[in-house]
Length: 166
Image (cartoon, rainbow, N blue to C red):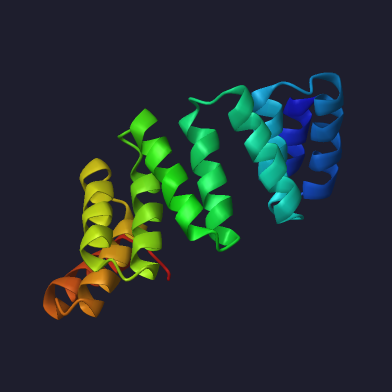
């Protein structure tokens, strides 16, 4: 049933996918993957309900960096940035090669005006994935704000070359 929900999601039928995913959860309520997938679908509809299902997926499978990272992303959307930063840290402890988590945490640190820490996180993301345009964009923005205009412009240019459309 969950595979069918995945197909529906790929074709943009989020509401229908959510229905099938919920049916799978009714059968297997303690399946971490079903809870995580359902939360991901709910992000497009109801952030508060998505938060519940992410928490449940993490309660079931506490060492899943993907669930933890997705939950951190949701917390960031909900402007719970202190909590999001904590969950990015947990995700990175489990999977230190997660460029997206470093980049996302860099974005939070940028919002906190922790420019040096943000630049470090964006740099780590770039070291892991040298073609990660979003990390170049974030680092460039952080550098410009912190007074490193030339270097920041180089990063923004690189982000543009790689296809970042921000």
